[in-house]
Figure 1 (tube, rainbow, N blue to C red):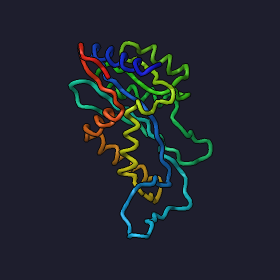
Figure 2: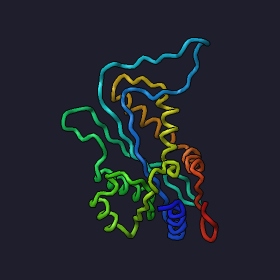
Figure 3: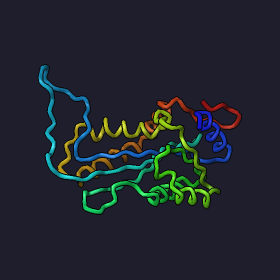
Figure 4: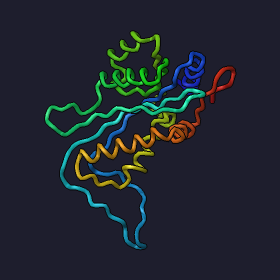
Length: 211
């Protein structure tokens, strides 16, 4: 699908009063992401990190846009504690539940735009979309096009903000910090808007054109 396909989907959704929702995933373990900080000239700042410990927090999020409405960000966490036999990533049922939650919170039809991740393409999710075609339309992003997905910007905000140089003591602290960081973004819709602006895409209504 070409970029014009995304634009066409958005124009159709606007006419139907739907929310345009972009989905993406990210994860964070106990090793902190690197970020810029202050330090004495000639002395590289060092953040000490635990040598042991396991676990990972996976995040699936939707950035949601509708002309005339405050932009929204809705997310779901999957916690992997490193136990034997434990599910490591989101299942198709987790994505289903995220979409059901978004539909309830947004109170309107949804046009879902996401990439070609294997789990996004499983028959169960395709069947779910077909069963709920009255409120759910799915559009696949072009291959290798993260620059068209504003949810990528949420991960950048999180890793440059709440997670920057964080040396979490344990998985519980990491979960708390991630939830706090995501909540701050949720309460600042201008940040969610900025993620869309960074893609070069825009959502308009009526006879207006969509870039």
